[in-house]
Length: 290
Image (cartoon, rainbow, N blue to C red; front, top):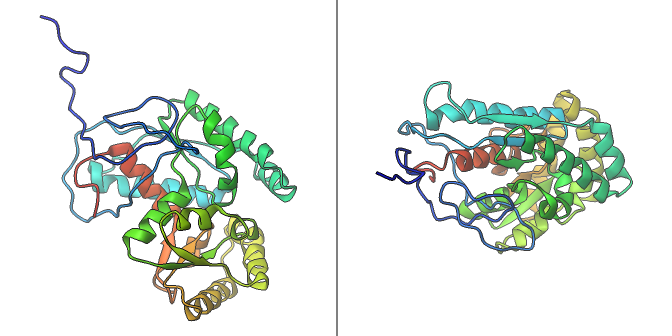
């Protein structure tokens, strides 16, 4: 008797959220057209108690830039995978990282086409390693994503879309943006926030410069000082007084020093939110939303 190719395999749920991307659709996802082809995500947070899921997760590819942010993203996926998959379980993960100075050289000179080529080289390496989709735990180089996505062998999750969706889901209306001066001056977050009807505020230029210095001379090398913590807290206090009701930690190293426990505003941890979005997409199990 003839059987279908899927006979004997566990059916995967279709959660109904749209997928935009290149490459093949997996596990019931639907493809829709869009000018920047990347995956979109509605936002979730892990609950303490979840049923174990007898599924085969997708293979996550991490296009890494700076080591500390990429490592935190990787560790978050591995640490929170068991909440959905059972003890010690997490999706398969591959990561590729060119030398950071190559990215910085491109960014300093405004060569976003060059940054895109570095991202595409990593994408190709990860596709050959068997990854099903890609994430990049670096906010700054998302400025090149529109150049990358149309040529990418695999679809991407956008860190800005992930953060903006969570901000909207939490009912936040005006977000302060922290990050490198390259990121703060860009349209990465303003565009994602505006698409969801959310307002934003950038720190003053002198504050942007000092945060940039702390990131590039301390945080990306794993150096954490009380002075850096205090400075970030003071900038966040200023954003709160200016009417912000949340703050985007728009550098994947800032969560090393700032969190809800020491911030006067609710924080949107771009590193961990991206990791959780990737975990959710890789698993696509039931009860994935809060």
